[in-house]
Picture (cartoon, rainbow, N blue to C red):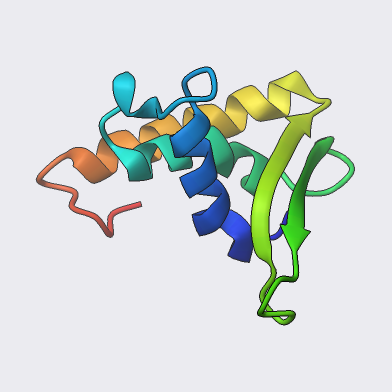
Amino acid sequence: MEAHDFAEVSQIAYHTGFFGDSAQTFFADRALFGDLWLEPYLRCTGLASGAVGFVATRAHNHPDHPEILGYIVGMTDQTSYQIALSREVLRATFRSLPFFGPFAC
C-alpha cells in the first residue's frame, strides 16, 4: 500500500468498518475514522516497524490507475503501532480545537 492509496482505502474502510457494514453506525466523522484506522500503518513504514499493507486492484478501464477492491494492513511491532496511533489521536484532537485550527499539526 502506498500513501496515494489512502483516500480510496479510507473510503473502503469506512464503508466496511462495522462488521462489513458502514462505520457511520458508530463513527460519524469519515475523515477522522480514516486517519485513526489507517495513518498509523502509513506512518510506520519499513521493516523495522513491521508495518505492512497491501491493496487488491483491478486494472479495468484505467490501467494507469487501477481500481482498489480491498486492502489488508498489519504490524508486527505492537509498540510502534501504539505510538503511531497515539500520535494520530493527538493530531486529531488538536485539529478539532478552535485555537489550533486545521493546520496546527
